[in-house]
Amino acid sequence: LIEKESDWTGPYYFIQGADPQFGLMKSWKVGDCDNGGDEWQEEIKLTEQAVQAINKLTLKPRFFVLCGDLIHAMPGNHCQ
Picture 1 (cartoon, rainbow, N blue to C red):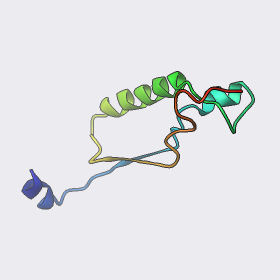
Picture 2 (spheres, rainbow, N blue to C red):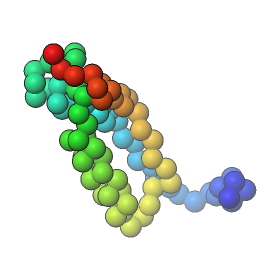
Picture 3 (cartoon, rainbow, N blue to C red):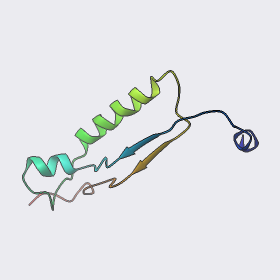
Picture 4 (cartoon, one colour):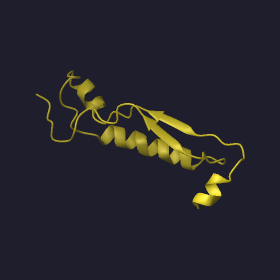
């Protein structure tokens, strides 16, 4: 597979995603953007929708790169 990829010369495109920031939506709802954000359900749903949309593309991207803030808060960091 590595040899095949190194010889590949055709046109391509890729997708760049940014800032899924899991937990931020909850912290916005409770009005505390510096703490909390211990629930990721909304962001997980949106991420799944994005993956499904990408998987439905007829012309598949060569790769997907994710940049930015991956999380806002880890589960268990409860809002005060």
